[in-house]
Length: 123
Image 1: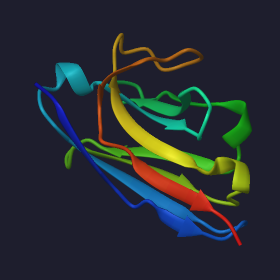
Image 2: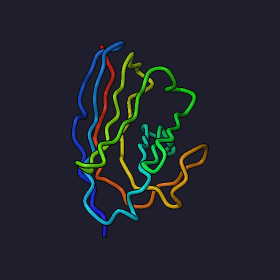
Image 3: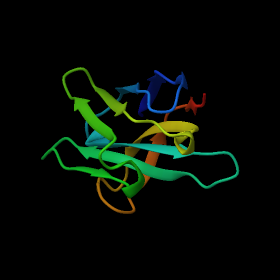
Image 4: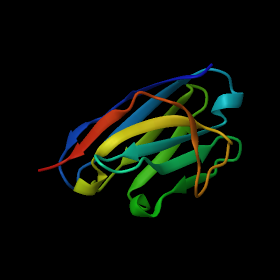
């Protein structure tokens, strides 16, 4: 059984920054790879970024490359998403999740999910 608890969402101006955190509770097998997803109103949920703890591999969807940075503190069982140069189109509910299979790359999939946190980018 795996549980995830998120924090850090909120309102930010275009060009601003925000840092999301995700605390993970559970077995190591189910948390060997973690990722962030987002879902904007009226759109499908999409994978944003992921990280694999075994070798440090990370992946970013094209729309956030160069602006977002994913990281993981294995000792604390926490994952983070640093979001810089935010744009209105980044507005969405952001979810953290364990990945199954533990593949981090194009098409990565979530298994256990957090509750979601709202990120709004607006003037």
